[in-house]
Structures are given as C-alpha cells and as structure tokens.
Image 1 (cartoon, rainbow, N blue to C red):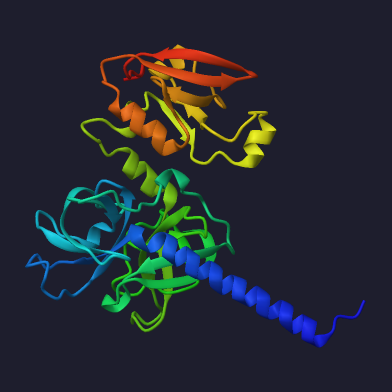
Image 2 (tube, rainbow, N blue to C red; image 1 turned 90 degrees about the vertical axis):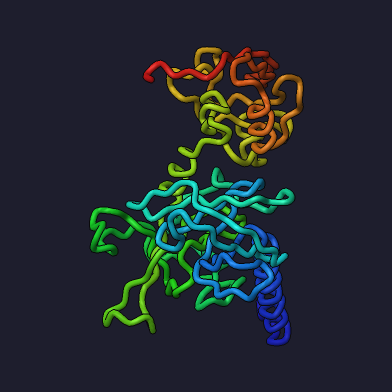
Length: 328
C-alpha cells in the first residue's frame, strides 16, 4: 500500500508534537520536586549563586543531594523548582563514601516529591530526564539515554563501585540532580563526569544508582523510627497496575500490594504475606502507598495495628504487634 508523502509528513509532525507535549508535561510534573542549592546563608531576598542540585523525597521538607555539594554544620539556601520559593536548609545526615546527603528545611506546606519507592534500575538505552542547575542556571531540563546501566572503574577512588553512565555530561552545578524516567521513577542521582584531558568542556556523566540512594534513605529515622519500623516490616509495591490487578485476580484497582515482609518482623508473625492487598489500616481506607505510610506512622508505636487485607478471593483482618525483628 502506498502512503502519500503529505500523509507521511502529517504522521511525522503529529508524532513530533506528541513527543514535545510529553516533554513539557514531564517537566511540569516534576520541576516542583527539584531544587537548587546555594552556600549563601544571607537574607533569602538577596540574589544567590546556585552551585548544586537536589530533589525532594518527603513532602514535609526532606531532600537528597550529593555530599560534596553541601557543607558540614552550616546553614545554606535552597530554591524550589517551579514556584521559586527559597528556604534555609541544613544537612542532617550524610554518607561520605557514597557521596549522599540528607537535607532538611522548614516547608510551609506539602510539596511535590519523588517517591523513592518508585526507583528502578534502568536498562542500557533507556531514556532519562534530569532537572538540574548547570553552571548556576536553575530549572534546566535535559534528556538523554543510559549509555551503560552499570559501569565500574569510573571513580578512581571507588574502583569497585558501579555507576550509571549517561550519554551527556554532568556539568558543574548539576551534581545531586534527579535522573528519572517519564513516569517519575528514579534511575539515580547525577554525580560527576570524567574527561580525557581533565577539562570540563566535554566528558562522560555518571549517576549514583537508585538502589544505593534508596538504602540510604531507608536508614533515615522519621520521628525516631525508620520506614521499616513504621510499616512494621511491610515493604509495598509502589504502584498497583492494571496488569497486577488482572494477574492476581484482585477484582478492583485500589489498595496497596505487599511486595515482601521483613523476615522475623511483627507483620510476618501476624501472617502478612507477599501479594496481600492492604485495603484498610485501623479502619481507614488505603488507596496508595502514601496512605499506607501515613496511617502506619500515625499509629502509636506501642499499640497493635489492624489491617484489612484481600487474599485469594476473601477479606481478612490481621492484628500487627509493635515492630520487632528476631535477628536484632
């Protein structure tokens, strides 16, 4: 069958417009979960020089960046993407070896955030997006593809560590930026670049893999408790897809699906199993992973939690004792 040139041109233009529209939507969706960093701790009203990047992972004012970007024991300034609002911030935890730092600020209202539970390991060739502050230019949006999903030897000081190799540079000011896919799944965090002549004019960019970031964030206490303790050993699948609903015969697309249960935890003792669908916590409906975390965190740590779950065509109620783990 012959395709007229005008029709072919129209198809190409339509696909091009859809791609451009998607890029705009991606930027608008996630720019508010990114921020720029300035080491200036002067008045928030004064102009700033932005020297680093980061991203929000907790809506109440917690973010992540590279450890080398932020100082010890010193207040600095962050500027939120999209709204441009500035806050004083500080480092409350860091992992120098993996070049990670936890940043905290006093958020005036709930903010956009990346969900680290949505972090994934990309394949070589996967398309990625990044919102960063290269050369001090905040809210810079870039895209590329993963040149190699696991490259060792890129950092001479950590020869056995693997990094995600990007097909673009990580310019000065971009360290700490989120590297993510079109659905907001975190691939990693932009960290450094290497070049043949040691210059910053060209080079190959590298990112810290998402699993390293996730393990660091998981160790962060919230109100004196880690997420593992708050959810009493339950680790959820972040998004309940239509495919999972059909495959597991769940009936409806609501609730939070259990990925696995920590060995020896109180949830395991109570009988929570992989692929249980959590519908309620203490009588409160659970629609998303955020709902689960919120309700579990609001439950007194020394009291039982009642879960309503769906398993094999029937609803069950389980009482989860306060967090414990036998191997501790």
